[in-house]
Image 1 (tube, rainbow, N blue to C red):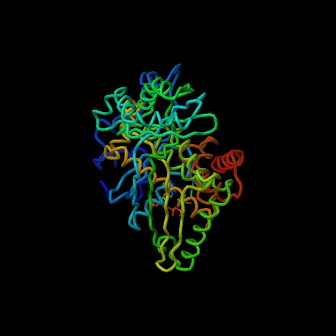
Image 2 (tube, rainbow, N blue to C red):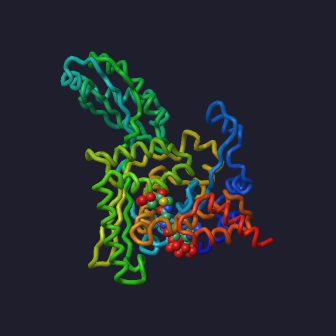
Image 3 (cartoon, helix red, strand yellow):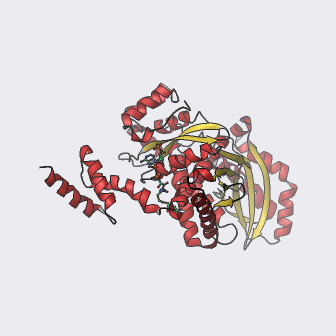
Length: 424
Ligand code: HMG
């Protein structure tokens, strides 16, 4: 169902689940565990990790209407932070009206490395390895035949001398998997032949999370009229958003926060789809530093003549749809079903689009109302709950809290006590 999701945020969780059921987007077998709150049985958790005691739950939300490459997605988000889902919903809506996102998956391969040391002549050693390139690629494939049967396998190898090391790199088409086990198995099968060919020693053989062969770009073009009904205000906002993106290029203190805003959305979908968020974060932050200083990952450019704001985000997105714990977790299975069982490339394109949308909402708020207005409205609800407010007490407490300039848990508790006295 790509129909009408208006008012979705105003419904109760039970009503949202009912709507999801009626939409036909989620098959019954995936919907049931969500509806019955059976998202991760303890026995499954015990298979996924060690020394398991229990599971830790996080809010599982839905952000409607992400239009990416002409296809509309209802996107699962797992996040504990108030206003992330609201901001993504807001941005997705505006960007859909402006034509949606266009994406480009530059490549989908993973890189691994073997660090060789104690090599007398690095040039000669590299030459010996390159002469055996075809043999070494075949040997890597033999170490992991199932990926070759699936259409993937070792694709390239190269060497670079860095400090005391001659580093051997292997690039592998991992198809639907993230490929850590695959790469590590292939690399370990090559350490002995490489030691023989180079006369050196292998220090380690491991996948790299700097996934520069898995770069994805998302772009969007937003008409000024969606920024504000007021023409002059819309143009001013677009100019300020362009400046905000320039600031994130100039100052690492701002760049870190700018990118954190991007990851508010990215991590939420990476988590919901059972992917390794540490790997995605490590790769993206290394990519943000590729020119020697840490910079913002996105760029916003205003085109005053066409009255359009252009957004672009590129980063490594080595996500998988198979392997790891993806097949084990029922909530993850529901997420993938909700997204129409995407291939890894499609999922990566969607996730980078989500990052761009999240960044749009954050910097639009920052250069206009300020972050506190929207964020604190939602933060107030969390504080109300923490203060012990009952369901029926929440609206009044939230409205009193947002009318107070600076509020915290103590303020929430005081106001709640006052409200209760008044209602006695
Ligand atoms: P608003 O204009 O007050 O929103 O913005 P609205 O009440 O007019 O609603 C507009 C639409 O937003 C709604 O449409 C929803 O789609 C969505 P409707 O459904 O009403 O037709 N929306 C919501 N969806 C779900 N639940 C809600 C909800 N409220 C609105 N409760 C908004 C409010 C929060 C969207 C805006 O202020 C905003 O985008 N703020 C940015 C918030 C943000 O980025 N938060 C992340 C935490 S801060 C941070 O960690 C990152 C940061 O530091 C990054 C950086 O510095 O770059 C900021």
